Image (cartoon, rainbow, N blue to C red; front, side, top):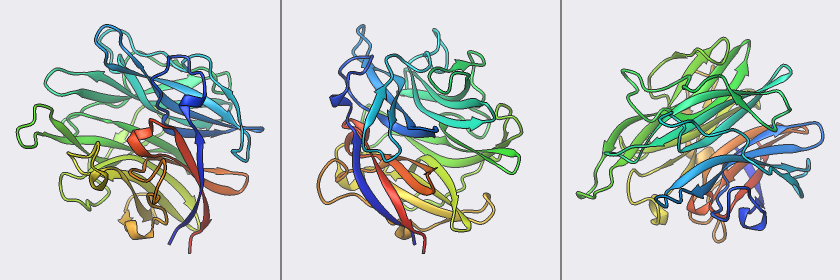
Length: 321
């Protein structure tokens, strides 16, 4: 049983001047622990003036090691969006960060708009040589995209380096569905696992690794993994496939699974040790978790209501009994 103590919301985009305007959002917070601060990357939104639709850009905020103060907010985007027709033309959400040697690697969740459905996604790769201030892409294309058995919506990468190999947990789409003949189709996606020797070329297993709790149309997103207490722990968020945007009972919650070998996972959400609050910024939804070590402690970043419109918060792991 995990036991988390919520430390509250630590970042509200409305309280800071973001480079891309007043639209707000700070989605999918991802931590990079530095010597004197913790740099938290997140996805912001801006509007396309030609059609009013959103773009997603990556920014960061530096916090002190106790997460009491915001020391700095990036003054421009961390990584450029893709060129015309590229997989990340319209946005990057999320961007997962990993220090490897003297460089910082990033795996990006790029997305682009479609006609018959709203969006498709793929995973890109970038490198930083200035301690995570800016990132440059290896190329215009993705390192992981649709395949024969993963036909669309490959995204939400989380990468960790275990015993000489890169492990990635990510999502892939299984179907698009229409509910009650609604015009907008909704997506269904599941968590999968891949291995790599260099972080660029990936061996994909192409199978769902986390059991469903809500049935075959359960949507699973943003896996994050950490080793503590003698085993591996995964958190992710899950929701119903439709009527989830404003219906509190069908929106995102945090799921939990454990593993002894990084391959076989046992899901038991009752042991997650964290849930929505009775009131406040995370009382209707919890989503987009990110686990990390800092100063001998384990923390979790996450978004709350409205998919992170009002910011992100943090929780401290107190027990793994």
